[in-house]
Length: 243
Image (cartoon, rainbow, N blue to C red; front, side, top):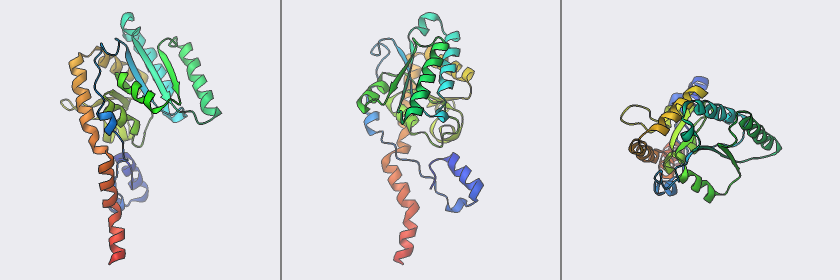
């Protein structure tokens, strides 16, 4: 069993067993997030919060987030930039992770972003939900993420996702075709900055349409569907033994 189209292609290229490979998307517990009411820009206090959920590990590529913010500042008018804040939420496993956070804080200061970037470590689930609801945009910068459960959770909560144009986010989660947009994809800091600015300048009704479409799309990754697909994949083994 594989957790995304990208992983399926990867496994089949190595093992060459497509008839024995079953794509089963991981169970994403989004029921509570789908029920969160959308907050208007006024209810968010006029603040444009960009929420990034990722453990502080090298592959999550937090430096790309900060470089994208640096580029974004050069695009936006100063009065808009003052309302933008990147909220980096993640867990720290050990001293190495804590050192990475310190490096990211230092990089933010070096780029003169310290007033517009906030790091929230090991926060409670209730605080996480609050941040998701108050956010406007979700940011994900890992290259070739196999799937991306945090992306699905952000979409369920009503964030407009901007993820790396690779792996599971590109193949399975985010739709960018006109008329059915559920999020956006980018590769480098310049692309990320342009997409972030585009979302920020959108009319609220346009943003709302994407939020609604994104929330509707995440039912494909529900726990109920995972159970159904998991049983479909393993059932033949048990049937053979019974016979």
